Length: 252
Image (tube, rainbow, N blue to C red):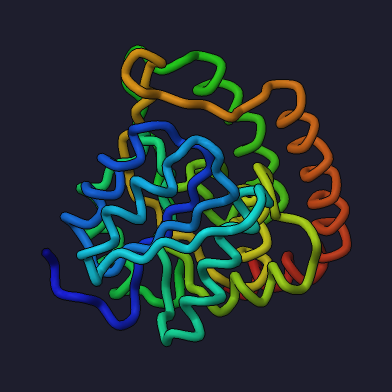
């Protein structure tokens, strides 16, 4: 197993991920130490499998939340405990096998070289990726770049990324949003507003079919309504910050 880092850790929020979560966690552990899994009120029996993995693995910690609170809440719980433990940066990845665990060391190295930045995965889609997923994200990406005056967000939705913990925790504790599916895009916009620069890195994304163990909690109407409300809020926040954002951009 890799030598334990005292500054950077992997956080995997997990809600009813199906059997794929075991392979996902094993793949992450093969690349990094430590790895923390935050179980967000799962009811599919995955808790027992994860706790069995962690039983004789000091580099794996499983945090179990009593009920489903949303991805953002799970990440907030993870980074809050991580900061108390002395960690400064967290790589987040999904528990369902979509994200490339083999790129964890490269993303962590990029973060260690630029600790003031957030390292954002920019998805590279396979030919069989669902067209709705590929094309639909262009709208959110367009809004996110407008709301930050084109600070350089490669993708606002892809959850494979490294965050500096302190500013992310501060932003999340200062507002009541960013707790569910809206976490990834709102986090990147608000971190840009806070002066955290984005650093983009290509990363493949894999959409697993149900027969491969793939599980999706995305609900088209519900989640797009949430994103629409989120971008409405962010655009209003952008207008209020526009003079300051322009001054910062023009000032170099």
